[in-house]
Length: 198
Image (tube, rainbow, N blue to C red; front, top):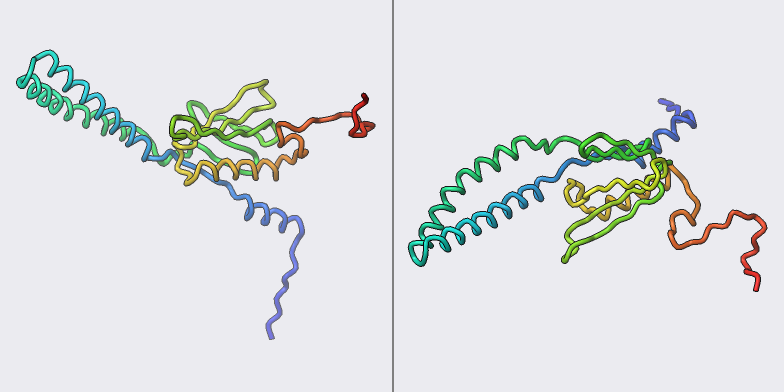
């Protein structure tokens, strides 16, 4: 008969539960928006070059000259775009979350501990709400904010990333309910009854 000892240390079980529920999450730069920006920029610039050459040269000959000029510049544009894409490191982690806080790597590495985050906000901006932005307001550096362009991250849904950040913050830096609700009033007095004097 085989006996198994299933007893384990409480401290170890807490750590493993935390690691299981709140693992380190890493996000890299998404390829799609970069390719789309380069393609869109190329199409617009080639169109403008073709229109400019047609306007300078005249009627039918100008149209042919514009197309030839655009085709000649297309080769140099594609070469430059491919060279630029080869310099972009899509495997580099640009955003990470763990038990210590949020780690952002834009121009310089920035680590934001959970306890120094005042508020995390989510915005969808643009005519078609195509830009998804997460703003992290810091307590430790005055009123400074860290902006994360979530639509440029390889994170699936930017809204889910925002909700995950809020869940991590609630767990690792517990706060009162009034801190999470921006419209709630905070009263420091323990003698306040909830009724205002008339």
